[in-house]
Structure formats: structure tokens, C-alpha cells
Image 1 (cartoon, rainbow, N blue to C red):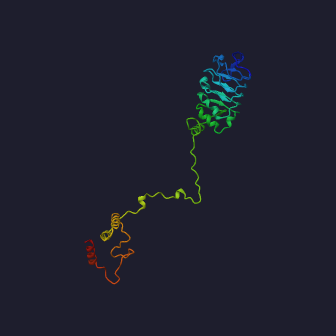
Image 2: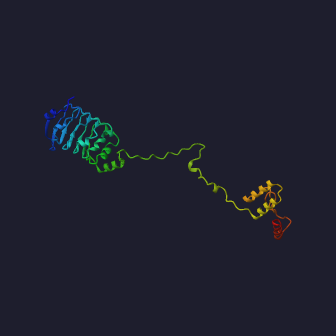
Image 3: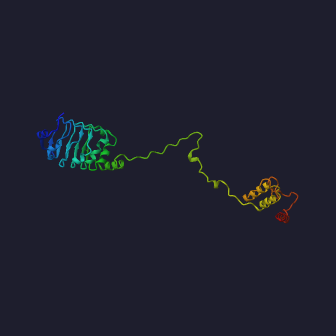
Length: 279
């Protein structure tokens, strides 16, 4: 493994590439660590570090002129978190044939706020679900990804899919649990609503005049204090004790009709009897 020294930088080829950028050629030197790039004095718009043995994209000084970085055919598996601060003007990054395997390994690329062209072909990460939409969401200025143009439809889809601020897929509410039937169990939909206690009981009606007269008569004829107390309680509650029979009813509580009379009952006699009982 060869160290990237200032002497190696000074001995390396320097030229204007096809797009008229001043480029430093450091490819094929078996470099394992990026270091000492301060020796370039920030004179290059493009640096080619392809075909080396770099394992982490880090070690850059502040290079405000660098717009293109080629690091394909290395062993890069990690990206430093401050790469955006070191390379603020970087527009093109080629990472073809490296060892980036998970979407989270690409999170620090979002610090490259001017990145427009990115290539990650021949990395395991390109096989991950939603890989392309994930990067489109992370890099708002991205125009080309893996040499394919980023379309407006893809941007809209990425925005919809990755709505959360942290860039993870928006959570989808789980479906309602399937209804199951257990033998002997009443389904919840068939259970009647709870009826308030006051609705269960019929509204109480006050005692009729006949009941009041009958109870008062029974109190007057009572022989013990317990009997008086029982009847007074029944009077207050408006209940007719079962042992009291109203006038005109038999012991079962049914009205008694005069079978010997062909006409209606004598109203005058009933009124006289009522007056005598009240007296």
C-alpha cells in the first residue's frame, strides 16, 4: 500500500481534461488513505483517485475549487460526515465499483449541497429497495444518477414516499385486525348497547285513590306496630301489599262483576261505601 504524500502529488500528471477542467491524475497508485491533498494548494477542479485501495471517503482539506471527484474501483465502504464542508462546490462524484452496501451508508452525501451528478453502479446498495428514490430525496439538486436523468415524476414520487424529515419511508398505518369468530362468543357488533338503569325500569306511577283508601283502612285495622310500619312504608312507595284486596276485586286482583244484575253497577251505592270508608 502506497501513501499519498506531497511528493507523489507533485510527481503525478496534471492536465486539462475533456471538459476543460484542470485535473490531477492519482489513479493506479495503490493508495489506501486520502491524505496530504493540501499540497495541491486547491489548484484543481478535478481529482482522479480511481483504481486504488481507498476504504473510506475522508481526509480532504477544504478544497473550494474542486467540482469533480473520481474514486471508482476502490474499496470504499464509508463516507465521512464532514465531506460536504470540505468539498462545498463538488458537483460530480463517481463511486462506481466500491463496497457501499446500505442506504444509510449514503446519508452523508446529503452534505454535498451542490451535487448534481452521482454514479454508484456496481455497489451492493444499488440493489436495495427504493435506492434511486432515496437518493433523489436526499439530494435535491441531483440531475443524473447512474448516468440516467432524474425525472420530475421521480422527484414527486420520492417526496411522497419519504415524507418524514429524517428521510425514512413514511409509516403506513397497519390494516385493521381481521374479524374472527370464537364459538360461544357473541360478536362485538351484535352486543346491544348498555341501557342506563333508569331506562330499564318503567316509570313509576302514583297510587290510585282506591289503593290509598285500602292501605289507610288496613292501617286503621292493624293490630301490631310492625304491621302499621309495613303498611305505612307501602303507602309511601305507592305499592299495594299483596294481602290487601281492593273493593270490587277478588283475591286474585280481578274485578268482580255482579252476575245477578242485568244493568250497570249502582254508582250511588259505590259512592256511599267510599264515603263511609273515608269517614
